[in-house]
Length: 426
Image (cartoon, rainbow, N blue to C red; front, side):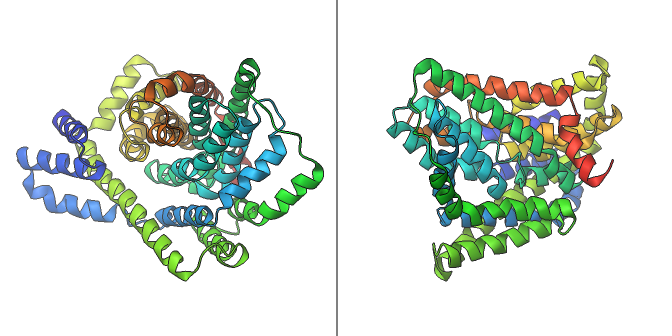
């Protein structure tokens, strides 16, 4: 089985797309291991992997995020956050983080946050005299809150691959998401005080109210999503669909940002992105079937349990493994590959699968902003026009505080499980 992973990484190294690399290595293994007769069975597995009602939430979350971006709601969120926290030392850094936390309740995607809010945030910070590398580091680290606070595309996928409740996974990210925001704001505060970064003039209550009324209808989106799920009114998939309808009405009729022609183009973009994501998941499912037949989960379990049987230590081992892998692979691909492989290990040791799933998603998001190949790292470096080395020196402070958050989650599982148990029962 080691040959299939070796072939896969070789394909990745030479630039083959993730899904094609996984499928090509799988087919290579079947052809040259004398199991070519299994090709039909594996093609069926590829097709059936995306046949899931739960996964319908993914394109709906993507569509809601795209509609919000097209309606320029990101600009309104930034202005509202500026009125709230702009007066704190390092004002625009805090605005960056608060805006990302608000947008996290609408998009469910770290890359959507980086590409949408990131342009506004980095330009504003550079114009006010903040270092480009600092602006990039704040933007990249705050953007990964998006996949943690519900809604979250990664949490939906994580729930599928760990065979757990989507609602529990989504709600499990609320406390860690706010911890991430608080930790990042702490770093921004101390660095800004040390470097003498500017702060904004304190907004009056009239200014705050003005920004709130302009942004208020958009801020109702998280209420629909989270409130609908927690109240039991909607399933996560239904809540995502309702949020899309609300976002469409808001963008087209309230803000009048675009018309039917542009809406059609948005549908095409979301459909293309969804197809690419589900293709990766389907390819990974075929690879997972091969790995299961080769007893890789069982062997991985034996290897980890030969080191320790302590659940907390095991979580730290998994976190370290995921960070290293996340530095060279894309987060969702790793999620669908490693989730099924590691799940038997955590279940054997009595680790709550929701706790494991949320920690896994957060860890992979953390790896996404670290060099050498994190997507968030590339996008923010491009937006801020900074080189990788300068960015790396700045991002280390933010990575350190996020590692503290992950560490606390590993040590105190109730940080993840408290709210799901409160709303859905133990």
